[in-house]
Amino acid sequence: MDELVIARSLFGTTMAFHIIFATLGVGIPLMILVAEIMYQRTNDLDYSVMAKRWTKAFAVLLGVGIPTGTIAGVQLSLLWPGFMEVIGRVMALPFQIEIYAFFVEALFMSIYVYAANRIAPWMRIVSLVLVAIGGLASAVLITNVHAFEGTPAGFEMVNGEITNVDPWKAFFNPSFFVTAGHVALSAYVVGSFTIATVSAFKMLRTSYGSRIYKFHQKSLMICLLVGGVFSFFTAINGHESAQMLHEYQPEKLAAAEGLFETQTHAPLAIGGFTDPVEQEVKWGIEIPWALSFLAGNSFDTEVIGLNDFPKEYWPPLFVHTLFNAMVGIGSLLILLSLIAYVWNKLLKKDRFPKWLMWSFVAGGPLSILAIEFGWIFACTGRQPWTIYRILSTEDSVTTSGNLAVLFVLFVSVYAILAVSVVLVLLYYFKRNPPEKDINKAEGNDKDIPLST
Image (cartoon, rainbow, N blue to C red):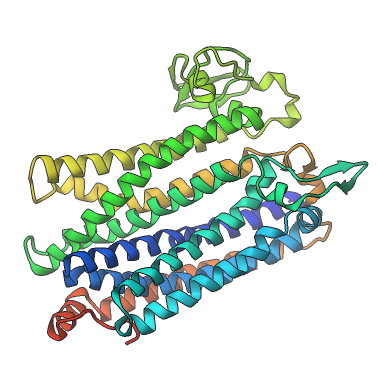
């Protein structure tokens, strides 16, 4: 197999695995913060128990996210030396600042875990706010390197030499804010819907109306509320992302929508698959003029088609399917949250039908799939470039051989880690069911300590 393909497969597998833990590492701290705020406002011990239990799950996930993130960093240097040469001279700031963001997250999580019962309530909130900020900052800073790859700025390449370097201009590249927003919002969606999955599943396995049922019901409702709000904002941010692609990476937008001919009043293709021979999206549903409006807030907006670019610059056309899957899942999550709100708040029904409960169970895995689809779309849609229009992927890859052996070894490590984290979580929460923590909290008439 070609070394370039193996290198891309190896790094892609690493990121696909790591991004699950990185995303949950941003989303779950927000949910812990929400639960802690609810406890401080209502003095309902259930919310304190939720915060503590979610913190313990977060600690396990963080224990996997840190080494997989380290592996990703090492692979960048080993597999993509051409790329890292540019990054080292132009875009090192995010990596340097990210270290401090991680320190903030780790420090204040330790304070919350070991000193929560010894500090004032407002200090607990502040600690969790700083944990959430630290986790988010780490994700945004690292993802900013990806934003730079799509919209490079802050340097010039003259005769193969890097000149006129401006690190801050590279840092605040044109897509920085849009990409950072998408990372944050989508992570909060994943964190909330993943917890909602567990809550809904436990409700299905618990007697209706019981103490534990009501505990999981409270958890489900705040997760659906938070997840629904951030799903909606993610959709708005997606509109901004499409406009950014229209301006800076037009062939990527054209590939995402299967558009071959440049035109105004361009249609938006939903579903189907892109046929490069017939140059159309087969079995898709077209919404007239919608793509032009999406790209420029006007039906008259001219959207550039793939035929205006050399074929060697075309991204793989299957990105249309990835883009549709990501958008489709996001839309479904918004719909689930709306249905839950109408059912519970407007119709005043306390019990969801079983089909809806199973839909909530599916919400978490689907949100993670959406993250995976979006990440693959973002990276694959930039091909054949590592740094758009400046450095090709082929010129970035290592010239070392024997990557196939490394690929097998790393995939084996990820499989072991995946099984281990699932077994650890199952073992811990089986040994420590919610009723145990609830009884302990109610018996002490205060929230339970985290460090025991």
